[in-house]
Image: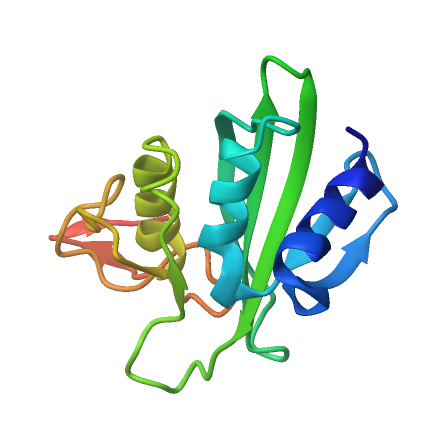
Length: 165
């Protein structure tokens, strides 16, 4: 299947609202998926014999900065048997002044490897994943304050008496 056939397969199954935008340019074209349907879309792409995306090679969080107040998740999928690759993206607005973290549905029930990728996005960007079985820091100490990959992060001058450059 090619990119357009996959797009058509998803709109036939979930309706026109499933894909909010298409990014056809660049090295890897991407489909921007409605965040409320991301789990169902991923399950369909994994289970459908025509696509069989059996491997989540990467999941990354993106902070669009304080001026846009948007957070994005990028999913790099691969179908080993069909020799296909696909990029999905989902994006949400989030008020940075809110006490809550930006939140997306976990895809760890679709691909177990998402557990580690989502923990990294949580740890470094402060993105919460609803339904994640073990969402906790993976790279930084448990008592670290803030999320260092956010565009508005201010680094501490020291951590436990150790100067940070």
